[in-house]
Amino acid sequence: MTDTTTTGTRKVITANLPSYEDALAAYDPVMGLEVHVELGTVTKMFCGCPTAFGAAPNTQTCPTCLGLPGSLPVVNAKAIESAIRIGLALNCEIAEWCRFARKNYFYPDMPKNFQTSQYDEPIAFNGYLDVEAAGKTWRIEIERAHMEEDTGKSTHVGGATGRIHGADYSLVDYNRAGIPLIEIVTKPITGTGADAPEVAKAYVAELRELIKALGVSEARMELGQMRCDANLSLRPHGREKFGTRSETKNVNSLRSVERAVNFEIRRHAAVLNAGDTVIQETRHFHENDGTTSPGRVKEEAEDYRYFPEPDLVPVAPARTWVEELRGTLPELPSVRRNRLQAEWGVTDHDMQSILNAGAVESIVETVSLGAAPDQARKWWMGELARRANEDGVDLGALAITPAQVAEVVALTTAGTLNDKLARQVIEGVLAGEGSPEQVVAARGLAVVSDDGALLAAIDGAIAQFPDAADKVRAGNQGPAGQLIGAVMKATRGQADAARVRELLLERLSS
Image (cartoon, rainbow, N blue to C red; front, side, top):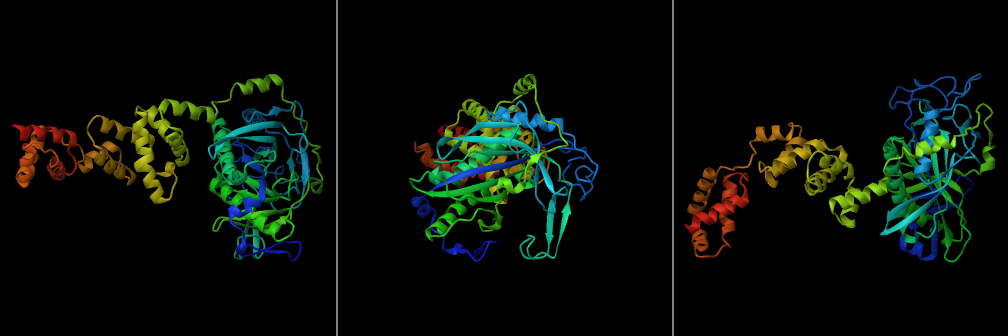
């Protein structure tokens, strides 16, 4: 693979990248993460157009979001409220007075030829977010969280890459243009060393959970509701001055954030090791192989010719309102996790496994419906996590609800099912055969609890394996397992093994 910039003939052969360990042996990574979050408002940032996802192209537009002459913007009050709540949750200072600005550039997906954003006067600034990664707590300092509007969506048709270069033509959908965004920008993240990719992933994951807890966005990265621009530079060990950065744009999954940072560390190291100079540019991330490729040479702030937006009045949130909003903040994800871990009595390792599996909310809801925490964890982290892994889907995408898992737990607690039968019931629910009770009835899966039926099966096992029975009568209980296995087979696994053992020993001792 050849990496060719737009500024000349400089090339880097990415097939010869150093190993990650070798790259970190010589250089320290410095990261800066910019996360864009689409706010879940009903209407756009500066007009009354709806924001519903999936509408036919260009049906959710008006003169204002298309930038037609004579149209004037009006600020969405709900978006301002959401931005303040995000800033408060990130431990930021909230500006007493701030303005919007015009960020000028030409690109087909921005119909006005400028983006209404905030420049030197953001609504929130100087905050932090603590995250857990690599067995440590990292404090990620927040430079700013500012409001802006999203761009439209370009689709490049033809060509091999789906990008504008080599495409036959391009289509633009302006439905997304003008949707409210909050951009959260970190200060330079230093000192992470070899843990840099994991820290980046953990930060975006924690931020996503925070946004969802606030209820200001669904933050679904696969839908573009939340996306990360990962800035990365390297500096030789012992040097204070930062290196030249690259910016990998619009990374849309947690795994991809981690992979993009990993790759860029190795790519930068290759450039520096060759005595070359890193170019300040944007990069595109490729999901198929985890590499990046050049986008465009990165602009500086002056290239955008920022100036105050003349059509919008400044935003000056009253301090009383800000404090009222502070009082509406929910229990933050980190506090909630610590509380749940204590309530569930699980280790740090087990809690991290639950988080990694995306099982927290499923377990919480299952417990709220009456299941014991250990039983809820057992099924979500065992059988269901296995099925999700086999199917290559998230745990929440399985065709089973917390209410149905709680019903399975209730049936096992009542003795109607044993674990083997419960797994078959879950299989039936996932196959669309109905509720757990309906699957039990249709498949005839209830535990055989009638002692008369169990004794008949035990007598059959004794007749089938008389030598094993004699050894048990003589005091050697080892062969009892063979007899219990025969009973379980005869009852299609529907007997209570503990009750079978109890009846068997009584039978053979008489």
